[in-house]
Image 1 (cartoon, rainbow over the protein chains, first blue to last red):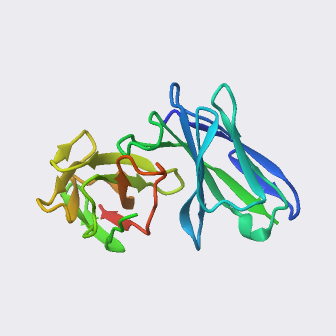
Image 2: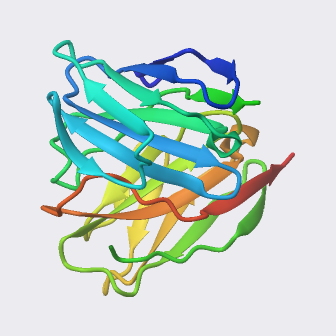
Image 3: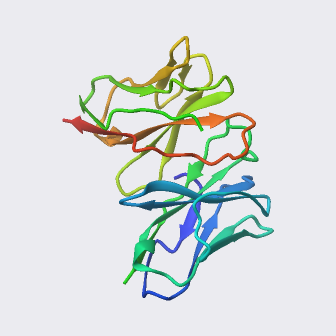
Length: 116
Length: 112
């Protein structure tokens, strides 16, 4: 158990809909990262938050957004869903700011999103 | 970001040592070498990291070449539970971003 929790575990929705994925980081970790894993693209970084502020952006679509709340949990919002958004979405947390390169990231169990 | 090269797949027998290689010929002096693994149907899991010296922890050992252009993750006694995809990733100290850049990794199969 990494200490990172993600809900829901599975999500099935239709094209055009909007969903929210939730992540609670390990106790004390200020950095939260979101990654997407699909069969054709592998594991890709989406976005990082540090202590409530956006720190870095990766290949995140404009239809996707995220935020980190004062209690440090984070939410990833996916809207106007397309079939290609079907993937595993992982959240990870780290005790560093993200710039040090030396802090390990702890991953949650993921949310499997299926868009039909 | 500096790139890493790993074999697509490797096989091992249970209870034997496994050496997983990683080439990173363009590594910079401030790049840390991280290893993560992903077991089937699970999120990635941190294994070990190092900068210049060899490192040991309860999961594995990391052997880093003297010129730092390659490294080897060593599992001392493979178990069936070690069957996973292993990723070798470079993380720059003081870089602009802290996210991990995953390649395809090495898929390790462990035979009983």
